[in-house]
Image 1 (cartoon, rainbow, N blue to C red):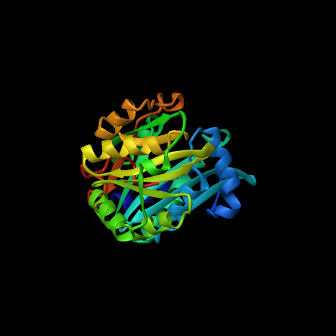
Image 2: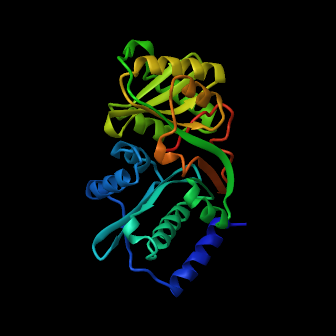
Image 3: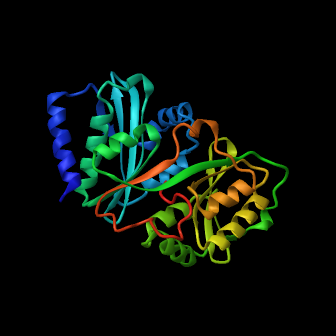
Length: 296
């Protein structure tokens, strides 16, 4: 059953009955980033332009923004790995919620993904948007929780092993994610502030986030290896705020808690992030070697 196509047909019918005021246009980072950044900060999300640039660099990436009466009303970014679409982030400004902005923004983006051959979709939601995703036929899976740690003392950059070995990075990433993501890894390697770090069989990516924070991203490997890697990252980056979307209840979360990470106040009522799937997703990103988010 083509669940993506079925949803699009139903949504298109609804749009004919109740068209909204929003003008939907393709996202252009140079033009739209200031408005996107302002909206991210109001919603307390720590993402930076470099995060959107990685998704935007993927072969099947689709992004749209919505405007109402010339005012920026929201955005939606997506990309794909193979034939699986990842719905990165959609935020509608609070001033425009309830004004038929989200539906056309969502609908036009999904149409563009389907036109490129996407057969399945993966999305992560907070508690406030989970009900809608369930109604659209998505099935829940893994949960992730945001953990943060304030700067403490000094850092020792030599405490962690950095690597630029592209093939080794790709191999480790593929083992955890379920496919080789060459465009994704290359986009990260092209960013000067991004660092791939390893400890034995464990691997992670250190990515910049808002207010000079560091995100511990794409953590993979054995549980024992991941715990040792976290120890070395904390030693290397202890002078920076650290953030990580860790698999809820896993070895990574346990080690973060050991090092004094806590769940930020804004995330407590809306978390965890739940992963939802629809259609043929080939079980990407569902292995036991995956310990954190690997998609944004």
